[in-house]
Amino acid sequence: MDEKGQRSLRIESLNPTHLARWPDLINGNDLPRFQEFLLGDWLSRFEQRFPDLIPSRSPRCLVAVEADRVVASVVARPFNRRGSCWTLQLPEQLDTDCSHSLRTIQQALLQQALQRGAPQVCSWVIRCTTTDADAIALMRELGFQPLRAYQQWLPPQSVARHATPPLPGALQWAALNRRNAQLLWPIEQGGSFSHLRQITALHWIDLFDRKGSGCGVLMEGDAVLAGCLRLPEGGRRETFELLRDLAWDPRLDQALPWVLARIHQQGRPSSLLTALDDDPLSRVLEAEGWQKGDEQLLLGRSMWRRQQAPRNLQLSRSLDQVLGRLRPRGTPLPTPTLGSRR
Image (cartoon, rainbow, N blue to C red; front, side):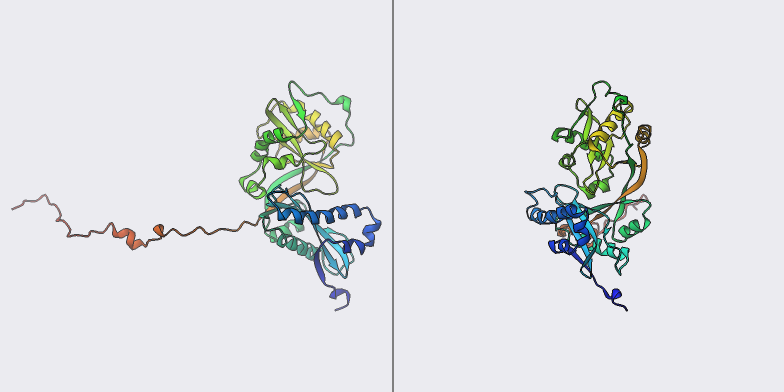
C-alpha cells in the first residue's frame, strides 16, 4: 500500500487550528461562513447546558481531516427551539485530493454528527433531492425514513411591480409576529403527518423563529389563508416555504400573485418550497413565471428510547389463578331432569 493509501481519516469539531491550516479557505470567500460555524459551535455548547433557559439556535460543524488537511464538513442546526430535533446538511466536499471515497467521508461525518448530538436531541431531519439516489441510500442506511416530498421553485428573473394586482377585498399581508404565528400554527400542523409532527416536535414559537425579510402571513381578520416562512436549515442562500390550508380558498387565485411578488422583491429567495402534490398552488406559481426545480425529500430519524413501563403485580397473575374463580369449589349440584321422580 502506498503512502497515499495509508492516510487516516479523522472526524473533529471545527476549531481555530483548522482555519489556520486551510490556505484555500483563507484566500477564498468561505472564511466568514466557517468563522460563523466556529462561533456557533461554542454557543451551542453553552445552550445545551441550559436547555430550559436558552433557546437552541446555534449551528455545529464537524470536519473530516486527512493528513492535516480538511477535506469535507457537515453542519447541524437546531430544528426547534427546544433542541429536541436537529437538521443536518449533506456533507460538503472541500478537497478532492484525498484517498477516501466521498461516500466513506460522508458516512463518517454523518455518523459522528448523530453520535455527538446532545442528550436532549431525540430526532434528526435532512433534505435530499429525489434524483440523488446515493445520498438517499446513505441516509436510509443510517436509519432515516422519508417523511414528506416537496417541490422546489426557482424565482423569475424580474417582477413588474405595476403588473401585480393589489390584494382583493379585506385581505392583508402582515409580517410574521407572535400573534399570527399562533394563527398559522394549525395550517402548518394540518399539512404534516403524525409521524412528521412527532419527529420535528414543532411549536408555534418555532414558526415565529423562522421570520425574516419577505416572510409573512396572508390574513383576513383572524382567518389565515397562507404563510411564507424561512427554512431553518440555513445554507449559503435563503430558501422559503409557502404554506396554505388544506382546502383551496378561491381568494388565493387573486391574492397569491401579489404575495409571490412581495416575497420575491423583499426576501430575494434562491428558491421556494411547496408540497409536491399541491397542484392548484403549482398552477399559480407557473403562471407567475416561477420555474420548477428539483423535487426534494425530507427524511427523518427518531432517537427516542422505548421506556419499559413498571410491571403491575395485580395484572401479572397466572392463568390458573384467574380461571380458578370459574372452577366449582363445593359438591356439584345434581343435574335437573324432566323425567319422572318415582
